[in-house]
Image (cartoon, rainbow, N blue to C red):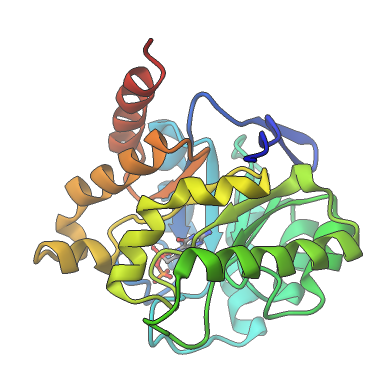
Length: 278
Ligand SMILES: Nc1nc2ncc(COP(=O)(O)OP(=O)(O)O)nc2c(=O)[nH]1
């Protein structure tokens, strides 16, 4: 029996309403090499300008990342990742009113970001990389995005079954560390450790994750699965980004993580109006 997810995401002193309006998380990659926008926000001034633009477009959350996690990326040491994030988070704390999430799988970086004012940890390894991450989230009363990921791609897997097992393990770690369920968002991890068919299936079968009774975040923005459906560069993938996010919104996804905030807000409002019509 599908459980009803919590209706509010408690992110430190922020209470984010979950549904019926889809929350839009704007992507702020403070990296030189992110697959679609690398270098655009590498300098703190550029990052702040892009943060202001994303908020002006209507972003409900800003997701700030200091390390590209694209396939084949070069891992960045925690010191370097934090050196990229620190000036940007400091600038955001002084000005940006929307909640900030830090996109990191390193507990050390997450802790520094939370101390610098972030509200949410976005862990693309869903508590499966750093054993200290759940404790850091609990200690700072932060919200957390637990994203499904795999070290090995295995096309023979039922990817939703693999996700459910992964999330069950993550939720056990969360419970042991004292992370309350009303702080957790689950994410299928599109493009992470999955074949092209598994990525498509993960989006189509998103509703099956509802058995865990937690809110869902979907991140398809400009990703290569769109380019595999129809030959496009990341900059040409806004229509495919909209299409894949509308599918998620029709399945009840509560948060979408996107580069193009204004366009996806319009798409989300239209999709919600149709989804919720009698
Ligand atoms: N929760 C969550 N976090 C994520 N972080 C990074 C990326 C990769 O996209 P992007 O940040 O645009 O690229 P890069 O990793 O190259 O910076 N995708 C997700 C996602 O799907 N879900």
